Length: 316
Image (cartoon, rainbow, N blue to C red; front, top):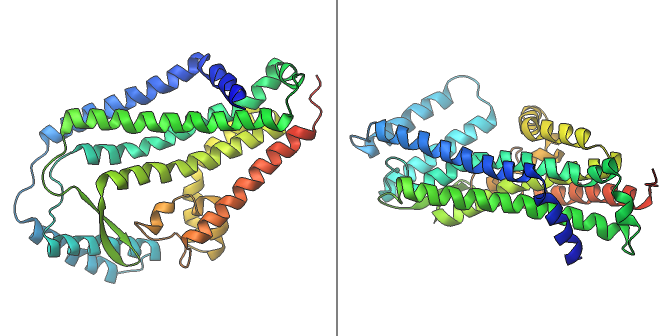
């Protein structure tokens, strides 16, 4: 199995597009760092009593919650902000002044979508391209079972996505440390779960954010891999997966505002951070429920991919 994975890894890095993907990630991080540094230098420093400012903010937020009709999800987010502000005031934890390496890494987590995009492209092409180029027959004439060949391709795809995620985290951290430093004051992160505010290690929080953020990456890459194996069409796999990557969460949020059955949709369960720092999309959802739903989708995707690939005739 190791030799098969190694072979697939070499194939990926023989493509110029792979280096373009890595270069784009580093370039975007650099541009983001430059703009953030510029804005940080030209922004006004925090003045006045921060406790008084947070108190006023809480009072205004409470008034906004009382006026008009507001979705439950929006109210929950406002309650979260009020609770965090109160915790800061009570425990004398001032908000961060200016940009730091921690806030820069946190902001760069939005780039995980680009990691997902690049991983989807690899997942969608790693099987379909073998059929398009006719090289699939060279693989299948070897004395290796089909499921091993497909499994090696899937593992390589996931390793590639995790490698890009690691590059994003490390490069962002190094650049943020150079440009902004660690900042002053407390480096604790204030998490909100089950109606309570809890202090967490900032580094641990960021690692969890990136790992939990990769769940979307994993599920959509698995979907793209399944479509590629079933239909042998990389364009179809890329198109569907990218569409869901950027619109799936929006659609799910709209459905969840009206129907409780939205909790069974894949994208209602991919953000596990809501169970340690936030509010679930649908009331009553639990971590165990979301993990179970994700496992079911994961099994279905892989069952279709391996089932069809193992039985279908691949002769030209």
